[in-house]
Amino acid sequence: MPVALCAMSHSPLMGRNDPEQEVIDAVDAAFDHARRFVADFAPDLIVIFAPDHYNGVFYDLLPPFCIGAAAQSVGDYGTEAGPLDVDRDAAYAVAREVLDSGIDVAFSERMHVDHGFAQALQLLVGSITAVPTVPIFINSVAEPLGPVSRVRLLGETVGRAAAKLDKRVLFVGSGGLSHDPPVPQFATAPEEVRERLIDGRNPSAAERDAREQRVITAGRDFAAGTAAIQPLNPEWDRHLLDVLASGDLEQIDAWTNDWFVEQAGHSSHEVRTWIAAYAAMSAAGKYRVTSTFYREIHEWIAGFGITTAVAVDE
Ligand SMILES: O=C(O)CCC(=O)/C=C/C=C(\O)C(=O)O
Ligand SMILES: [Fe+2]
Image (cartoon, rainbow, N blue to C red; front, side):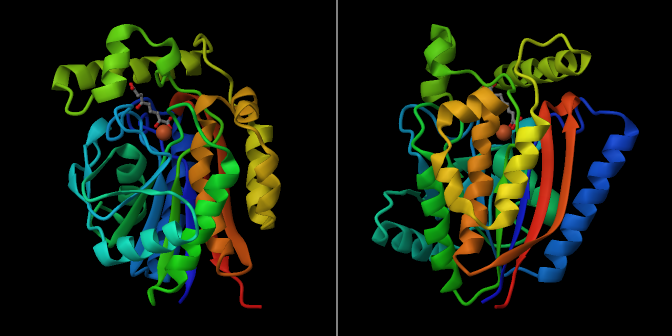
């Protein structure tokens, strides 16, 4: 059955610390294009790969990957809260195929997800329930991380499973590109922050507000050139976009996790979601990238990209 792809950056700072109007208009136009692309493809199912930012998955039990058979959005940064419309049968079918192929994916009957999933679904199809989904969490934040080659293999097996579903499947990758927003790291976090990284579900409104305000302030400082966070790396971003478009994804296996951080900041690991989505596409054969948007947006602390791709009949 047909497959298609949309990979996109997300940012909790959209609408909270916006760049100048010309940039917003360009992003809006790119999302309009992506929405039309998705509507024209008319997916029966969205398989979405996204990270979490210590809102749904914590160090009390932190799998590298997790497939949700049911999922609940926490509603951080004003995103839609509540249950996603998860296709449970499809989630089980995908999980079986992934496990059969030797990838030890975790599985959840109550996965908690944050803006990584919700913002992408809302931007592309209007809500977290508009189209049945299979949500797949990819740890992109909480070290230690496994090699990126495992993410590519996960994506490939998910793609093989999706091809057997007899559905029109849209693969979505949500996150990236180069960016280094203030997401705490366990190794360097003070004790009280460590505690919430281990078991921080259901923070009070005041706690959530303080966390969100910290990120908004960092966005303001970054745009003003005064934030002590890593710069964006548009050359690295463009190179990644070229590699993904080339279809030659195996070259990514040689990229080390340290290299991602050196080049493009800690949260550049979120491009794992793009790599998985493109690898899923590659399982169906050759593909062609049909649109690419890219801008450096300091206000959102993001090398911000949106790409779409279709399968090519050989
Ligand atoms: O305060 C925290 O623990 C997390 C901060 C946070 O959620 C930052 C999110 C940033 C992105 O999702 C992004 O830029 O990709
Ligand atoms: Fe993120």
